[in-house]
Structures are given as C-alpha cells and as structure tokens.
Length: 258
Image 1 (cartoon, rainbow, N blue to C red):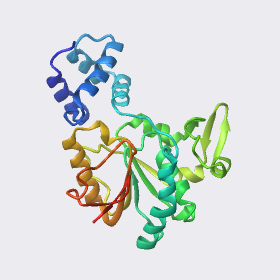
Image 2 (image 1 turned 120 degrees about the vertical axis):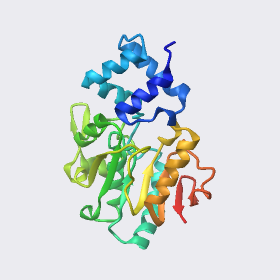
Image 3 (image 1 turned 90 degrees about the horizontal axis):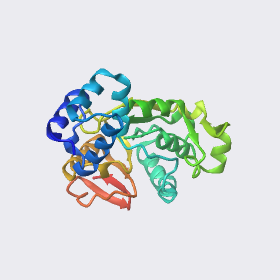
C-alpha cells in the first residue's frame, strides 16, 4: 500500500488544479494506485516527479483519472423525451438560437448527438453547442470524430447514412456536424462556467464526486442557466435536494431552473 496520499493530493492539485478531495477517495485511490504500479513507481513522490518531467506520462495520468465512457444517444428513451418535449419547449420559450452546453463531453458523442437531435427542429446553421472536458486527449479525439460501431449503435438510421462515413472498422462523423460544436478544456470544480445557458447536459459524471462537490456543481449549473432553462442528467444520477438547489423536476432526468 502506497502511503502519504494526503501529500499526493496536494501535489496533484499544484500540478493540475484537479482537486482529488472532491472525488470518492476509495474508488479514485484504487485507480491511481493501479496506474502507479503500471508505471513501475514505488511511491507517490516518485510518481509525481515522473508526471512533472514527462509530458506523455502527465497526459496519461489526466486521461486515466477522468472517466471516459460515452456513446451516441446513450439511453435512447431519454433522448426521445428531449426530442419530443424538451427541445420544442425550449424553442418556444427562447427562440431558435439556443445556448447549449455539453459538460464533461468526453469523446464528443454527446454534443454531436445533440446537434443531430436538434437538427430535427432547426437548420444546422442555427445550432451551436459548447462542449467541455477536463481531458485534452479526449477533446482531441472528439475533434477527430472517429467512432467504433458500438458507439454509434443508437444513432437513428437516417443520421447514420447522412452523417457518418465508414473507414475500415470505424465511422467518421461529417464536418457538417463537427462545425456546430465548439470544444473547450474545462474543469467543473475550478473553472468559470458558461453563462445564460438554455440547456446544460451533464450525464453520468457527477456520480464520481463527493456529495459536497455534487451540490456545488449543481448550484453552479443552476447559476449558469437562464430562468426556465433545463439541466439534463444521466440515468445513473439523482438530485434528491433539487428544490434546495433551485430546480423544478420536469421528468426523471430533466430539471428546470425556477
């Protein structure tokens, strides 16, 4: 068992501005210890020295630390509600130029899904999605837009034909869709949030944080939304104290700012 994890957390924060105190310790420490072992390091201090001096190992650490499980139209029933109820309501309330933020967007599956889903209601030229993640490597992968068959399994057939090109065993998303998404690096715990959002989508990410960190993130999401704006969360998540945080529950995974 590696020791002095408290010092390690401080060293990581100084180096990356990622606060490991905000993550569930047992789960995160197990992941980190596994990575340190793979890199043949025998102490946290030695590992910190390694990632300080080796850019590739530093990027590996950030990539390993962040949770990058994503797919297009994940939980299709929820996307059906988004398509049939949420988007029409938002367009009715706020018009065609919606400000939409896909937070912790991972490899881009979610923001690209948002563009396609919204294109049922609006011309592509009216659609702009802000997509953020803490991990530079996944943002680079998102910009490339190359996916495996499993990732795009839930994409509607007409969109598969229209917006994806098969390259070997992979599928390349079209530039038409890519152009509608602006990718940015962003740390949910530290960085300023986008303002005046009509819709924020952050799914299956906040579960990895402590309850205190979750509340802080949800409060910031509420501040980022305009009145009547909507937060769309993941099927693995619940907001038990949504009223205290300034939300009204619309559907199971959709919360409206009061």
